[in-house]
Length: 312
Image: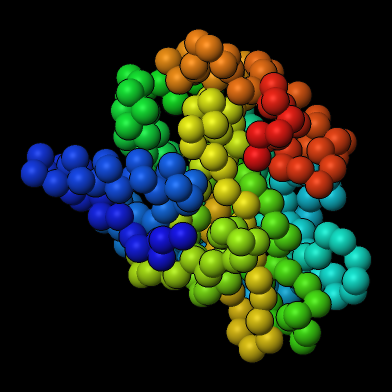
């Protein structure tokens, strides 16, 4: 696998460089499902501010953070903490805050920390900037596939955006647990900002490759719905977070999901007429229900929606 060297998005604005940048994105999507970007248009002052409010919140006393505690279910909003240092599966070693930001009707401000005071304003500005970046990336990815620029954005439907602040404290026995176990993201596209090394992506030969932590870079990874819409041309990648014994690592992850009632199906332009679609049509709510039920065994969840169960 490539070293995930950042792709300079400023080249998209230069006709002499644009084709090269698009080719780099296409290659990364086809080979890895992961890539990093720099000069992405999100102000450094804003990314620095988001890190600052995240650090300030996680530094609060536990009882103050628990005011924003959410329910222990998939996709729930609010603060949570899970530290598992046993042989149990799955393994977690993190605390987090998950917030729904789009659509606006799904913003439940009772889960949004009031301290630090600038938390809410910062998150609103940051997620607006990340939405614009997501749309620009989806347009490039669409065009690389020979589709109209708005295809993937339209295929995902009304944007469902959420942000997760994650904190991985030092672990006394890091070999016994993970920050997050291996998984692929279930939605459309994910944009992550790292603060410290610890993100790993699945490589060939059942190994893991550390995703380098470059200054002012975003990690972009394609999620399961993109794999299905592209008819397997671009695959979502398994990834995980590891922990260490001597320092805290944080990350800030923005997810883009389809609406629950959005129908997902392979783009007809990407389906071989002789073979047919590799994935069946579904409503996104079906995918969420399958995730909650754990009906996919030792396979990736997306494989359970393949017309051919041998698809990997």
